Image 1 (cartoon, rainbow, N blue to C red):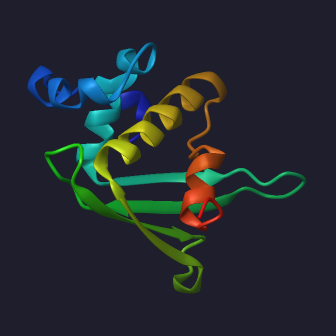
Image 2: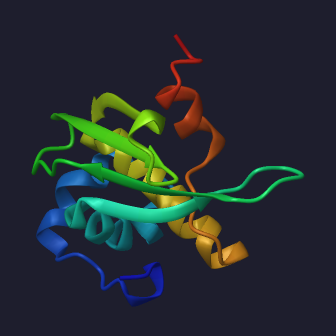
Image 3: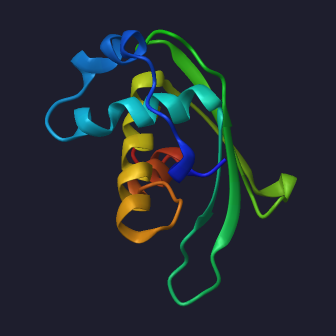
Length: 124
């Protein structure tokens, strides 16, 4: 399923996450919740001056924004290029909002740089 085919999540699910987001992010929140509930995202990591690298990100789905979830990411179908991180579900939803907005602008499915910094523990 592509981001274009996402349907907004039901209003009850969106209301639970609403206090965690302000401004324009709230406009994309229903689609981000819908994507979050799928538990998987396939895309391509953009590499400057190189070929994009396909990835599959998976995560367990929780109903509460503060619950910790485990997010796994595998690049290029290679088990040796797998990474895992724990984060609050609201943090992942925030990254998914960025994924959707970036897709709407550039037609590519990729996480923002902040996600990769967290994934590779560059923000510790």
